Length: 222
Image (spheres, rainbow, N blue to C red):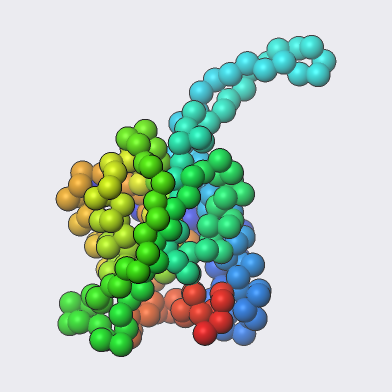
């Protein structure tokens, strides 16, 4: 089952507005992506299980509290290179997470097909061991046509079957959401897309409209 959470927290929407602005500099864009990743990480913790605990304060008084049961069972997989700044922010929340990377790119020189898909070139995959108790966070800032995230999901699921999958992007489209849903249903997953916005469409080059441009180029330079 796929759930979609569009995060309307004011701070997240302010950061998203900064990212959309074509006039901000490269370093400002990258820092904003880090901030977005951290803020979205707070929201993702709502889907982690809590357990009751008792602690003793410096005054020698015991009091009840909570902690995350599965904070040590999180794996973050970054789609290179665009996902790196968001991952930097997420790691500030999921500080014990194991990490993996998938280097993937749309083969844009071949153009977008009539069904709005691209060939995807995977050049490097490095994943930690993922167990059935783990929650996997896949970071891809722009969920545009869904071509890349679909291939990354299939690579991860060909090697493991995690307990939960979270797909984290700054902006998604209905098209990409539908393509993630196809994989989720095929593998019978418990999955959630976290995004700051769902924009309506992609243009003839496969870029999200209105979007924010190419996240990798804007974060690291063309």
